[in-house]
Figure 1: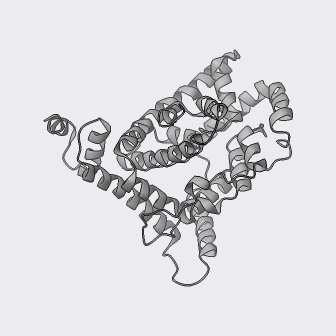
Figure 2 (figure 1 turned 135 degrees about the horizontal axis):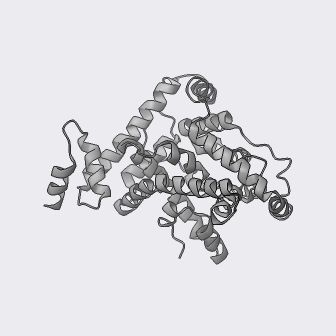
Figure 3 (figure 1 turned 45 degrees about the vertical axis):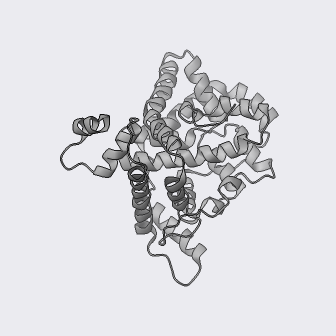
Length: 318
């Protein structure tokens, strides 16, 4: 009965039934599992279709890697080369906060990231290029060095970054959790495509995890606006406090930077966008939890400090 009442209140003429069902599911109502999974699968199919349109048909013959890299280059050049308002806002705050923390940054770099001054960062266009490559061909296409340069590019001004330093110096594979070819496949994509990983999450992840991820995505815009506004307010007043300190922490340990610009740019995501981001969060949480299960208490404590609040509730930190 609760579900019927909720649908009567929230469904409007012309609204998509699948996505209305997802919203009801996110609100905690007992939507049938088959309906929930079909809606998440549909969102991944739409993402696959969009990727397919950008790259063109999967070649039957020829060099698959060459097709992937050529397609990513074309996609970035035609659609994704402009710096968005959200990224400009973040860059401005980075520059101003960086000026406040340069003495402390130098001390941190000497101890935790001695190669920061010489390290190369990816610019916005290159980050979008490698994101497109990973989306089409899979995360395994990104080397640890590329991931480190990607992380450094998320934060301007040559700031030291502990996570990038680890990627550059740790011999372990940071993508081991997604190294296995996903179980479920879209035929129009390469087997290891990131979208196939999301498709497999949509098909197999526990419903409680999917609901938690859906809820977490709903929290992201408010989180992003709040941390930006707090830093901007303190910068304008020239009174550094917790807002600038939190922003600086996010520059040195940029775990949440992959979500910040998207959360600012899409404060009211469509249900399809929210579904894809929720699957991405669930995939990330699964990967982090794989590591947390074999790490020590220091590693779990570090993740308590590093994880953004919307992701922390999905992690097994003990």
